[in-house]
Length: 210
Ligand SMILES: CC(C)(COP(=O)(O)OP(=O)(O)OC[C@H]1O[C@@H](n2cnc3c(N)ncnc32)[C@H](O)[C@@H]1OP(=O)(O)O)[C@@H](O)C(=O)NCCC(=O)NCCS
Image (cartoon, rainbow, N blue to C red; front, side, top):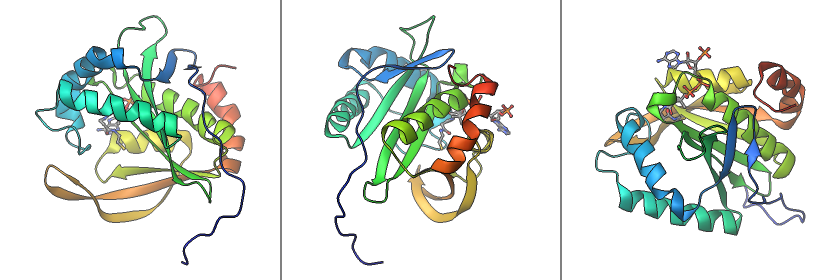
């Protein structure tokens, strides 16, 4: 494919306002989230390290601080948008992360990713938070297509993609190295039109505030 040329028009950027679901608040990170983030990561490292390259066994305050700094600048630059997920009734407790970022601004293609604190998995948090981030991706960033990459074997994450109506589109061989091992990833996609058709079902499931 030839190198893309500018065609005018660009996808949107995001305000730093909180986004809500019936159970959750999602907002940009602040420096003072450091302790809550370190706690959540420490409680979850054995699960996260199976799938996520950054979640090495020595992950600690310094790594979390590097992430927070990058997260704040990425948001400011309109490069990527990380949200801390909080329960409405427990705002000081970091439940997990959900993010959206651009793959191609020109083609209006983006990606989403997430992780949930181990003690809070199995409660529908990833699905609910990601449903809300898809609204951000399509309504606010004006994306046309959103993808998710999932390591082969990560059945929990595949279920999240399935419940949200993503289509499994193919296999990316040796896409990412985790713990020194190259792992195949499946790629899943959802188009704007599909999201618009599914949105009433998301609301019926209770994932979106009406
Ligand atoms: C994968 C992850 C995000 C799921 O978060 P969650 O909040 O538990 O997700 P939800 O509760 O919304 O949905 C999980 C679904 O997967 C299912 N599931 C979880 N583990 C499973 C497993 N090992 N086998 C089969 N199904 C599984 C759950 O039963 C649920 O499906 P259901 O609603 O049909 O019962 C979380 O476990 C996590 O953060 N894992 C580590 C990091 C990670 O994998 N991030 C994603 C990278 S792509």
